[in-house]
Image 1: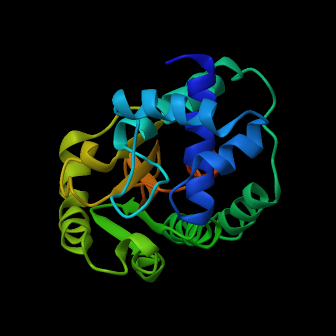
Image 2 (image 1 turned 45 degrees about the horizontal axis):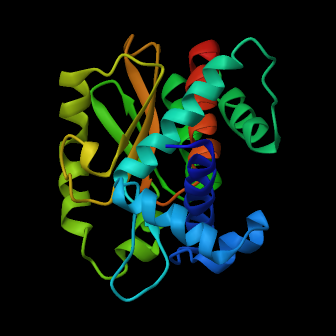
Amino acid sequence: MTERQQTILAAIIEQYAEVAVPVGSVTLAKLFGVSSATIRSEMARLEEAGYITHPHTSAGRIPTDKGYRAYVNKITDLELGAHELPETIDRSARAINARISSYHNRADRAIRGAVDSLVELTQNLGLATIGDELYLNGIGNLFSQPEYMQGTHVQAVARLLDNLEPWLREASPNKPLSVYIGAENPIGKSSGASLIISRFRSPFSDRSYIGVLGPTRQDYGRVMRLVRHAGTMLEESL
């Protein structure tokens, strides 16, 4: 992928995350100040490579799982390259800090509070392991997303949730932050969902997890940062 194609792919992903409507060449042409023909040519190359596709009812394009993976990898590389810079604590991160701090002497309540904050801030389903149980909140958020209004992916999402706790216990992802996009999910591969989880140490386990489950169409940069921050704050506080 050329640098311009990477930029166009990022714009499609970010625009689609915001409006949940396939993104057309005219919109991107205005954004980049080039002709629609130029954008269409680059979009055709991205589609040939499998990074975007177009619903048969629309001339616009939407990202594929492969496109999201390339985008997330780019975000991760940028964050790793800037890991020595002081973290910017914004209002959302401070809200997580405040919720965790209010339960500093109750580990289970602090973890639940952090999940609840992620639910409010990301409008996704929030989850965490507390001992041998999986705490979930925000199921209504998940199923109110446009992708799930027709019920196409609902059964696959349900299978994913039903099997998530035993899978986490067995697989024990060992990265500080793990992102499973669409078909990358171990169960419910046709769910059209992304699982973003952070590992942290807690009084319950050296491998506790907190994260969110939402549609593949989401603001990955912001959600990944908030999930990572929640895991880091829980580990420091508990």
